[in-house]
Amino acid sequence: DTAVSQTPKYLVTQMGNDKSIKCEQNLGHDTMYWYKQDSKKFLKIMFSYNNKELIINETVPNRFSPKSPDKAHLNLHINSLELGDSAVYFCASSQDGRWASGDFSTDTQYFGPGTRLTVL
Amino acid sequence: AQTVTQSQPEMSVQEAETVTLSCTYDTSESNYYLFWYKQPPSRQMILVIRQEAYKQQNATENRFSVNFQKAAKSFSLKISDSQLGDTAMYFCAFMKEQGAQKLVFGQGTRLTINP
View 1: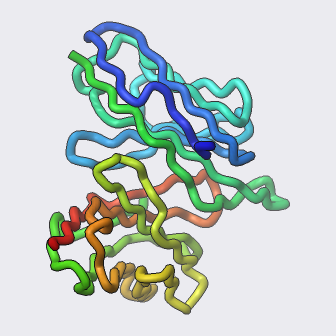
View 2: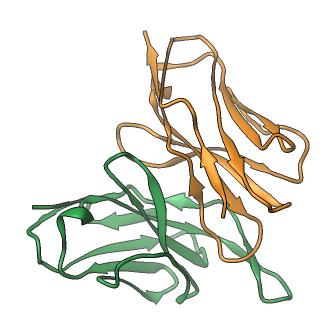
């Protein structure tokens, strides 16, 4: 009954390959995120989607493309993998409250178990 | 841009002792949230405690409590009666109240509880 799940948990692949990581949440949340944790354990936001709409796109190479088929799923596709892409990728989700202005505030983010990607 | 700094890369205490992890942040926002997340060796990111900046009262969750000093932009985590299961990386994180949301993390503190 996992709240935020990711598949696969481990991914080992060769440089130049294309791979995808899937994320699903069953919390009924509106917003989903991808974070990257590097080898020094530093965590940084990559993307965020609210109700299938891209709302955060940090400075990430365009080899990375998020896709949200519905608000419960946010997948991360990576083209032409490079050695530097090796990291742990975390999916997270949160519930938003939308303000009258169209802006919104966000509740606590809950994380998936992470996917360790190793590029050889 | 917001920044979060954890000045203690590693800490180690004996079981049952009290330990305090430091966190400072920099922001021009008035309203925001602060969090402590725990990452045990299992790699899972687990929410420990959350503080809303507009609340003067420090948040507590069982053995975990924070010392939130808004003027000083300081947000430390105190773990009382530490247990072996508290061994983990601890991350302090900042999030704005409004607008496109993202957690800005500190560098983490590796805490080891010794038997």
